[in-house]
Length: 224
Image (cartoon, rainbow, N blue to C red; front, side, top):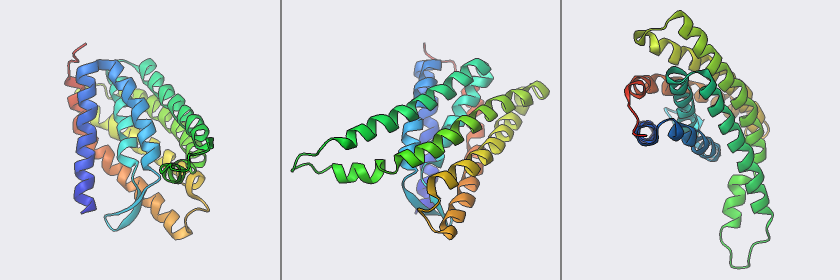
């Protein structure tokens, strides 16, 4: 069941990225970076079993961020791709600071949300530290690697090479940084290794799935 839902979930995410670009253009992609960064950091707190392996949920949403930066890099250049990376970085910092302050408020005796919010966002500083470190390093690596590959293979026919190639390398670096910082000591070693392996395998699958969407994004003429 999770596997079918995961593929549907990925498709919905990619369709929303295309939709926001179609209707809002480059501004929409910047908005998605902020939204996607926040949602990915919330979703990553949920652990699921998929394809018989243990994984965190935020991989698809996080993968859309690479789709967006690759699209910006391809159509508008490295300057706008870097701007998107920094928007995501700022969004993560704002999320952590604001939600930690929100949790500090003393809840009303009839409040029902504090425990649920605490369950999700009390882990946020550690997850955010891992995310911030992994995000800025891997995204900048992706942006520069994409441009370097593009200088060698410039044609539309090889767009998949720079999209998949830059994403696979940068996502490996991202996973190597994020998983130990976010989950070491929280999960057992066996689960931690499972999360690492599954996370990267799923990121590979997301990179392969988003390739047709990179081509479609390149051909979209936004309504601006």
